[in-house]
Length: 229
Image 1 (cartoon, rainbow, N blue to C red):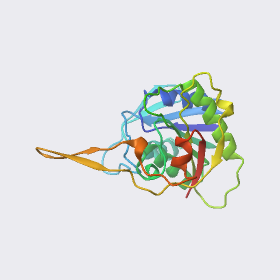
Image 2 (image 1 turned 135 degrees about the vertical axis):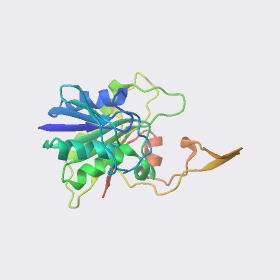
Image 3 (image 1 turned 90 degrees about the horizontal axis):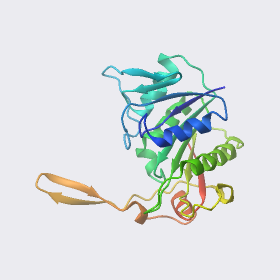
Image 4 (image 1 turned 135 degrees about the horizontal axis):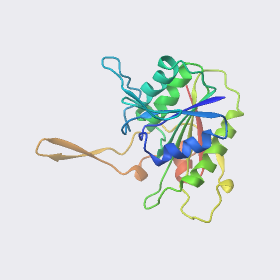
């Protein structure tokens, strides 16, 4: 089975390398990832200018476009057939309303429109913590395997968020897994005025959260899984 891998952190992101390692456990990985970071671009696609695609190595391509562009190029320009799409592993959570802004989730959403089982995977990091990508790989596999067993009736994609685990000795296998709803609360948004306009300021960890939502659970150490149509 061919596995399409993409992200929004760019072709050189360590989280993408982690996802490629995970994908190799399911089949043959094909990577089509943005040439540069595309965080926060949502589901934007390129229709009025050329998309440059560079082959970085065998089965690995950088695309001068968005994550959704990467999926469209792989499926339609290269005419490849995929049994699964894995987007990520994003360096940071994609929880709650993030799913509407994230390029990571947009790639999985785009793939789902074409009937391909799709999984967006993001690694939440608590303040002061550093990513442990080897642990993230094991957490991500637990999340993907858990979601793959679920039967769904409508087209959609799975949004998986890995919790921050500050204790380096803690094993990924001990982390609880929950299917949960997406929190609809907005971020605690603020702006600072400067000479020419306004600059966004905010604290991701202090965002509002509803009990038992993906934000609340992941912040509390749970591996969260949500199905988004």
